[in-house]
Length: 179
Image 1 (cartoon, rainbow, N blue to C red):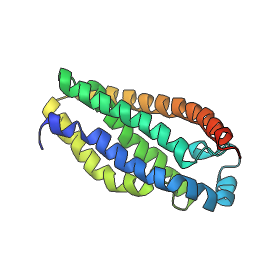
Image 2: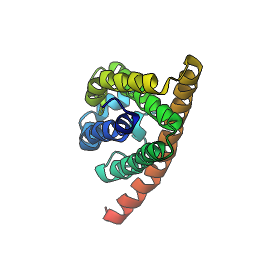
Image 3: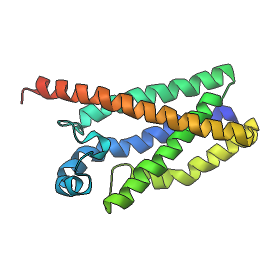
Image 4: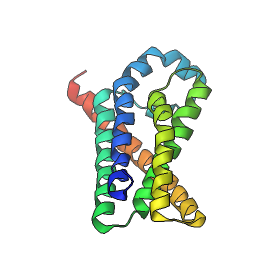
């Protein structure tokens, strides 16, 4: 449990458990809180809710699948090549995403938002895995800061790219459904 070969797999595991909450709750949350969402974010809504049926479970599942594949490949290549910098950055990005997206949006919304429960549950264990990885890898403060910035950029780029793709997929799935 104190080896990078074990810790590295916490990235796709924590991500997937976290995103199961989003997959299960995003569609019903969007329907239940539509009025409050429109009041809280009159112009740019979170989670891509500006798009037609963007929060449908199939659309969200496609985005989650692509992210899971990416995080699994990052973890696998990190173990294979014994180079954990990209993993360290991706894990930092995941933790920053949980804190700054889910937890802070929850405070602004003043109600439940999908992903906040698993974000709160996994923040402390995630920080412990991050700390344990740093102790094994012996990264200095500059490298840790670089990894955090790289991870934040990676997550931002992934979210932006996937939201664009999911908007197109959402429209296609909606048309395919015949409604």
